[in-house]
Image (cartoon, rainbow, N blue to C red):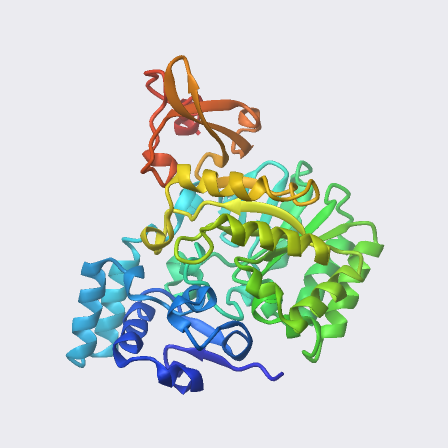
Length: 431
């Protein structure tokens, strides 16, 4: 299949979209001026059920919906479009709105950007001791965009919001100076949007640097879901698979960090074949996804997806809580409800599926797992723990919040037992 992308400029060329009402098409146009929109012919032709697109989970994941903008933001853009305002004025208003959407949650720019010789390395993030994130500049787009993506600022053309690095030499030097780093996550965007020759250049520099501390290389990618032909028919697909094979044969473990949000993404013949080809290189595939209201917020969806992944050789890894950015208000589900969904799905699968961890809030202090709801000392509480933290000493230490059936994020929780702060907060504020 030959790749074809559809963006705001040409989305009305999609044959199937002509059946939609003009009001819905206008909604897509309005929201896509603020939140990034891109879809491709594989998603359109093989994943979306066009007999009922409005209720199709993949349609909602890729085509912007009106309620993904708050009413006042929607109205501001809609008025400008209807009045025929200059594109520059529309863009200016869209940028104003974007800055109100918490474009970089968890203080990524303030706390995660490392420094080398007094210079901030804006294409790296080093939040957790053992793991470094690398954002190669050529990989800062995707085959299609998810409407819930917390990396949406990478795609909207506001350079001050973008995280990217063009010089892999700085990556290598930072790895040399930080022997505690064992894992490198190459992320984006989607690094597999890059041609294999550019990926190989990165890997060759890593290999020639003799980095004995670096054990695992992870690639974060949605390609298995949105463009499995990257591993089947693209002109450098065989080269990419050979590169994966070489990484594993040279003593490092390559982990493909896949993003599957619904079992529909696993059902196509091309996706199944692509998974087999990646596994044949000796790589492992781990799958992670957020729980999304209106898309996958039912236990049956998750247990079916985890079971199917295990049958295919994929390791279920994380169930995330939607981050507090972008269209969080559209996708968010109360934390207590998310835990109930996770618990019910988890109870219906075998031990091989129970590699999955969740629900997880990837927040400023670290990855916080919701352990459940209980009564302690006569008080109804939400039990939590860190599975990853800015301070490694926080990890696996349980703590408690007052029961709150409406809270959707960490910042809405209050410490239980009349405590003033959660145990980590003073250390976090000092750091």
